Image (cartoon, rainbow, N blue to C red; front, side, top):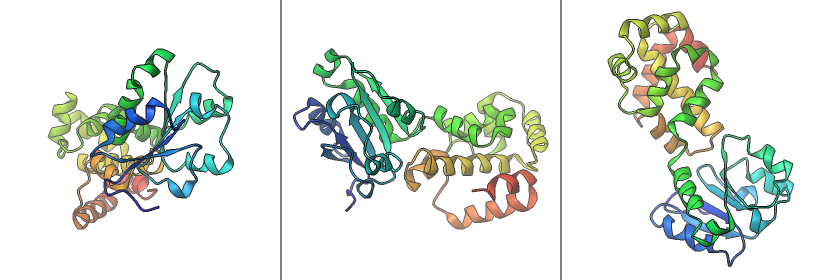
Length: 249
């Protein structure tokens, strides 16, 4: 599929006469392109960074075909729930971190689908810092002892560049942070920060299904790949933990 000049595409699965079409189109100007479908589009029409919005009340609550199910593994998904019972297949699909859902009453549907519009805009920006933190800690449970520091990097990826930035943000002493980093196997706090960025980047691409550019922005990785390679080489040679975590990614 030819990609939009704006990057992401929002795929909307709903009735062509639904007010949801106009509501979503109105807020996408300058952000993404809208494509409406009668059923879940095939996977070759979806890409990382796209948003797949499925109105289960309009489009039917039955599970998608195998082809349609594959599309749910390629894009970020927003499920619009209604008053009908949710099929167990969809309930299981909602366990995926790249799938979010909002339930609307009939009144909210007649008032412009505002909760859906808000959720779509949030999805275009990428997962929240809280979600990114959870993805990192789920991938690397050993980092839980410095969860506050992981959270700080996710909340302010471009502001946290040095150990002192981390101490100021978390209100933890620099001595404590350095000690915990050494216990985990990082010879320098900078190596820990780099590890958090790289694990977060990998998880955003693999599990949250955002674009490479969005993932880099969300974890504070610049486009200076030569400098990044030098940082990685230093971390891998000096910190056992960096070698343990980063060589998996």
